[in-house]
Image (cartoon, rainbow, N blue to C red; front, side, top):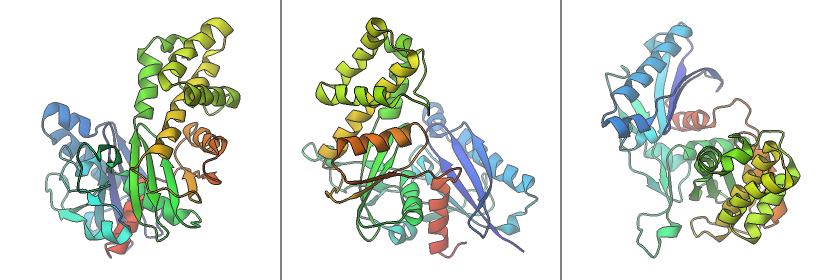
Length: 332
């Protein structure tokens, strides 16, 4: 009888429950638009628990499986926070696959599933933080499994800087042995959404984000304007670009994207949250247009000589990283 692994990835706004076979292939995914924000707003996790229960049962039904064919269930992301299902403390960097595996906490939650759920902890840069060390502190939940997945999929030449763009852009450094040595978070995705939909710039970009077919020259111009002046000035010049030069909403959206990503690259270079080295390999993952735009801007900046993008296709990186931890623990 073939056995399967179920992984759960719950973020702020959505949840993905995935089914994996023994060939490490994802055979089915259930997606829900319920995340931990619902718990924070409503003061309880009943809807989150219900969404996960429904997701697991849907996967079993769609694939004609019984509970006896499920080897284990692993969960990562904000589901391990105080507004998730079970809070698991972050572990401190540096940490590798074996450290995350050792810190996994198995908890039986009968109202969700009959098998224990193995909760994977997130990562924090330090156990000590005060006003003097505030900028060097960072935390993440969920991206640690994405990082571990990427490290297993790419050709690693030494220390690596992983860029994981999304609602919150995450940057993670690793050492030569594959341990995660630090992380840095920016609000770029949310900032782009807010500017695009809720400021005067919304008219210039027609309430639309840059597409995969962006105008590179406009992205680069936005990047340079923010680098040479400031992010807030560059954002406003998006309106000038539209009003005075009749630039299209598509070009304005590309310009805005370059401006916001410029601040991220500046943060990476200046922050004490990451363990950087000049010869560090840079790998940018994530969806378009963020992946290729950020890759090209890192190349344009020139601070790192080895920069590449990685297209993971339809592979659910967070789930694959959780699978690697389950395999390490002998649970799959």
